Length: 303
Image (cartoon, rainbow, N blue to C red; front, side, top):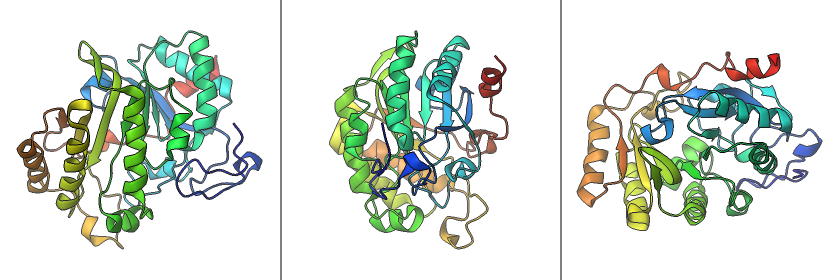
């Protein structure tokens, strides 16, 4: 579980996180959580009737310039939890009626999470585990979770190395993320549903960005021609400029309906059927939780 020389993501920064140093993700190896709550804004088969039991982890190996959750990605929000406290968070979310346990931006804590998940399952956790990620992680990192994660919810942000370098400082993003997604599909197999709720499988998300129609088509074409009906594709229109993008004027605006429509039309044209799309107007603050209020973590600490 040690992260003396951390290489969980492709940056391979080798930070001595176990001894208090921070990596590119801006985190030590102490688990830091910004929010834990029932969340209704995931895909319908993830949120279900009661909401997804989301746990937002602080830090991120990508640090995208347009990140909607920048306050936690950069580690400004969150509280440290022990492994046993995180077990209790999972069990509390189950008690509250969560459809699943949804680990949001968890890459930097995978060794610890493998231990926590084993303990939680031993203490009665029976919900599907969702791994919700930007996909910038190594295959070796994901293999630590084989048998522990039921649903993978990865992004495939870019096909273009130029865009990946400009907006996420990760020119090798597509190579790393596509290899990671292949490992996710290997672990889970084809999607399995119970009624309308996903129990096992992979949903790959792509956030369509301003001036990003060509790249979005390349991403969707790659996913469909590689995996066909073995995965679902979620085409998102909720891009929301952060207000800190003056150096990136081409993406310092909302996505237009026409841009999003062209991407959806392309998906239909090439034969994509297992897909989620969003209605016009979904790019709103409702997708950005308030990380000043840490949901059930307050209740956890009061018990």
